[in-house]
Image (cartoon, helix red, strand yellow):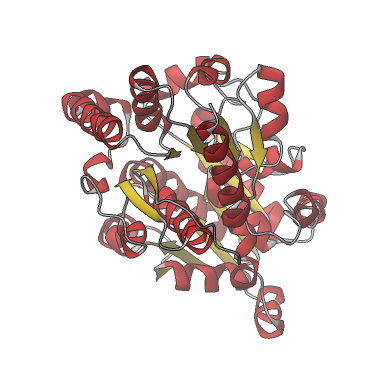
Length: 393
């Protein structure tokens, strides 16, 4: 890959969650390939960005806050970190600012930076869900974002309709991981064999696990009581293992706990079906070819707010990408053991619902294709082009 020669460029990146840290690290790697020694990175990131040479302003674990109540309690700390970060960007006066996901944090930083120094170009990597709620945010972003890098193929059109900043689809990182999601011949044989492997995915945060473990356990109990045979696997991450094991201790069906990303992907490759919390995992399952039933429960106050804010008929990411509501979702009061167990029976056996999902998932490779370029390469190209455009302003 050809390197750009010239004076050193300073790029400031901000990622405050693990998923953003992964994107930031991959982007930094390509930018360093392109710019060689003529680039310096500053900003906020996690362990993966640190391996690419970033010394973070603060540990991103300080922002691992979930739920409206927790945010209110931690608000002084959040506001202090927003000021600290924006002041560091303003002082550094970088050639480019890349904000990565976490819009409630990163966009506040970007607005402060733009107000103090309009010459710093700003790229937003991972669009906020303007198509789902707060659509007015897209228009507001014109004032402080020069380009949006979208992970989902339908997002550029949404920005055009909402009159937001330029938006380009660069690709979802999952499309680079298909080999770890899809079965080989032996794994396919296990996927087709009896008893079927059923995945249960209650969430990746403690609050989500707390809301879902009870109803998921009761659902699986009803499924077994109805004569349905299955092998149960519950993937989780190391820091959540203790919480999960304690939560499933009273379940009527004992799951095998798969700990870590490698074990999780191995479970995906042999699974016949899944019961999953709504979220990014639905797209992961769809790309793995695993039919699913989805559910989501939050606290009463969050449910009240979300019902009035959400603008789309489905919150399932895979449904939105496919453009058809093939995956059933059961939200709040509809998230009951009776409804979930009945729907799960339909994806564990050869039914029309299962066949519709499998056929729809087969379209995803085409829908999400980025040609022969990886998402991080496409993202780096736009970051560098936006930086060059900023230098001409």
